[in-house]
Image 1 (spheres, rainbow, N blue to C red):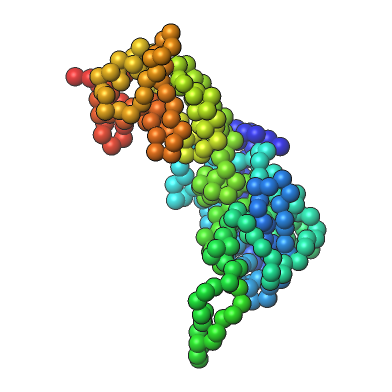
Image 2: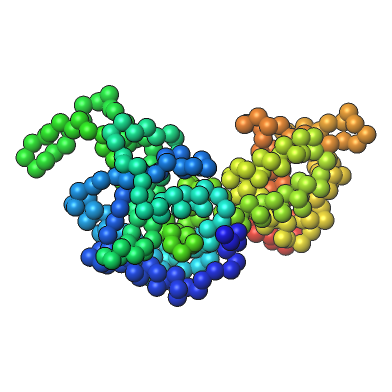
Length: 327
């Protein structure tokens, strides 16, 4: 599978595939639950449902597909946050979704039963076909067994139009906010976060984070540097922080100012900044502290969030952080 969103189908092709899902009367839907979808062999369950529920789901799919068709469709990029009038798309890369998709597309699955147990990371999937049974696409969202499909210590009741009735079955809560289509090896989504919350970082985000780390932290002497690199290449929030650092790297003067003498001098002038320096070796080295409260210190240092940077001698506007001329 592709590992980059730089090559992909045209906007017209993506729009045409979405257009096939805007008429609920022309589709059929199957409901699947996927347990522990980050595992190499996720468990997929067929979930029987009433005609009324199927019709409601199809109406929601059609509404979402219509919104996507009417939007501007763009290739996904790590640093881009789509506006309310944009959807983004990217090719499926190696990762959880590339494992889940073939399992979901298998013609039959084990039947969901009342005592089926789920772990912490699960998916709800709407598998969509035309009336002849040809695949149109899938829609994915997450669900938590802590909120659904688990016995409640409370007495549950619902209003049936005339009276409250006891609800003793396990409810399945389906969010109407469907945000992620999959078809033809492609993901189409309302935002990068719609993908990342379910399947982890987009491939371009991991690649860019690795490149930025090498060009910044990678050229500094750091005790625990390998551990820091591993954290930055696995923690999605650290990857996003590196995107912010890359924007600074793209400004004139920043890359040249980022070296060990400059960083050490800056820390000496600002002892309140919590980045330890190890002086036990032949040359001073920064120290990466893996504890949750301290593991961000070096990233925050390089993100250089000062109105006038004492580190790089570059001025920034307070809100936009864009460079402004020195006076």
